[in-house]
Image 1 (cartoon, rainbow, N blue to C red):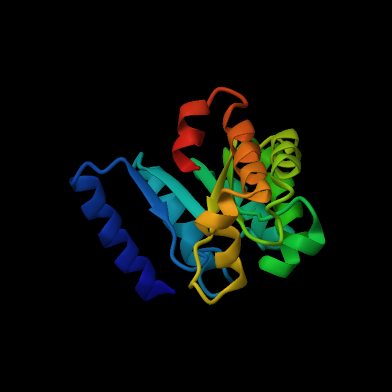
Image 2 (cartoon, rainbow, N blue to C red):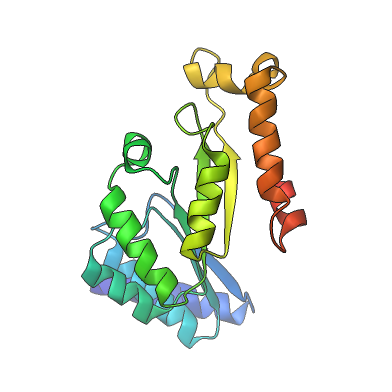
Length: 193
């Protein structure tokens, strides 16, 4: 909206005066329907001020919106993808078709992308396959994050000390370490595990 654009311009002017050189746009999903135009506008304003703009998103957007994101040219997009399989991704986040199609187009456009994958009971046995799938697609990197939930949840059982020291837990840790050992970003990836 016009009012929010004025607020964004003022904020970005302040950021520029403070000599901040990188802004990450996050919070919910900046590319959801209600915030999409504002998020793209903020990216463009940041880029005009020579401030790096990164975005955390599920990237569940249509092809027209994908083209607008590419045109805005963020410096980095962090995309939430929890599997290489539609069924698993949809069970955790939904909208696989939109996410995958947009991701593919953005990678083709050479906007840098890092995939954020939350490890859960649904995907913990797929770590290497997820890694290979997205790296073969052309993303710059993939970060795996363990989801910690309350003790009463089934997810908690996966990540409990007892489980992680069992055969399945050790296999999960070995798969995460295998991913960390791939490519040029070994130290960075190990820090995220």
